Amino acid sequence: MNNQKLAIKVRLNQQKARDGKLPVYIRIYVDGVKAEISSRHFVEAVNWDAKKSRVKALSKDAAYINGYIDRTVNFINQEFLKAHSTANRITAVIIKNRFLGKEELPAYKSILEAFDYHNLKMLEKVTAKQIVKKTYERYVITRNKVENFMKKQYKVNDKPLPELRLAFITEFEHYLLTVELIQSNTAHKYIKNLKKIMNMAVGLDWIPSNPFNQFKCSYTNPEREILNQEELYLIMKKKLHSDRLIEVRDVFVFCCYTGFAYADVYEFTHDAVMKGLDGNFWLATARQKTGTKESVPLLPIPLEIIEKYQDHEYCKKYNKLLPVNSNQRYNSYLKEIVEICGIKKKLTSHIARHTFATTVTLANGVPIETVSSMLGHRNIRTTQIYAKVVEKKVSEDMNALKDKLSQLPQKSLTKIS
Image (cartoon, rainbow, N blue to C red; front, side):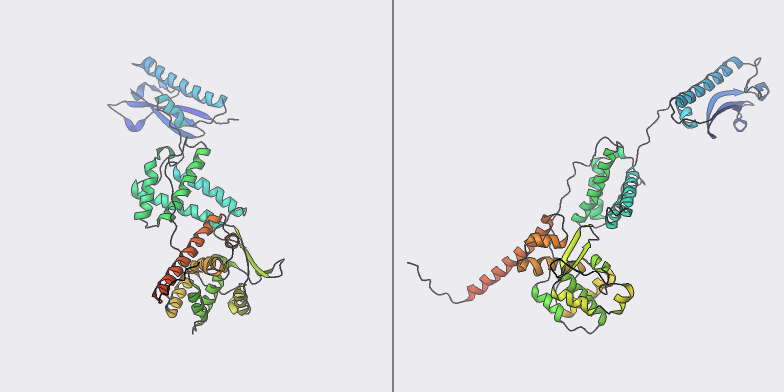
């Protein structure tokens, strides 16, 4: 039900006198909010009847000006009554614009409003534990990058959805690659998020179609840095003379033999190890990155590491399985360790996961389906990237063998009869 209230006041504007005359204004109030219409008619103050809000009958042009006022007031009342009868809400500005014949432009949603709507819904899903917080945070980051891009490229804070064209997303890609210096794969992940927002806007009838559909996102398989067996053993056996480096080395080796990412190992509590139906010890978690379940049976080496830190002061105080540093310190200490070991590779927390997938499992005959399950991959094609790494390593080893064999004295081949 529409309970809005209308009031109309016809007055002379004392601030806009011209040649001793004052202009006639019609003021509209809807729920106390006003808008004014200028009649463009001027009247001497002595000829104005303030009580009736009309020009005195005997003055010059009284009939003409009063007729204009009556028609205007009648129009205002009719527009208000039409809205009231259809239970539609109306404003004083809308009535004024209709009287002046101004086109009523629809209030289009903007791209940032679409992001905010989507992200609010995602945050509710995080609260309901339907998605992980990391997923929500990726869309928040994407929104911020889109906002920064519009400020730089178009010198605006936002854009209405109907104004977006294919050029917007191609320029956004260029901005990510050249201004923010983001790698192509990561840039296209942000672009996929943007396209998803636009598809949502189509589904909500905010725009008729997605202008970004013609933009195709690509993915290039990056070179995966891994440790071979010799390098892994070197790190494990190297004598380190600092507790902080020993702890980081042990956590890194633990990840190499379990495949868990740094963020997941950081969250493991003191009692995270479970005994499986097979009688062996297992670790399981929902991955911080995707929320996918990742379950891994523990090999002897990670079990030894867990046992080593059972009574560690940090682990007992914070109920942690292992003494894991902040990610920044962790990677910084790994850099020290690799320099001490003389390994010419940039060691990071994620290389441990790659090493588990290749050197520890696939290279030792573990089926790719099993590796995919332990890594918590949703699609086996993700795991096949690691299989290609193993194939490349096999090829390199065989080429090295060919070179060695070619250096040996060649004996004549005995023909088989």
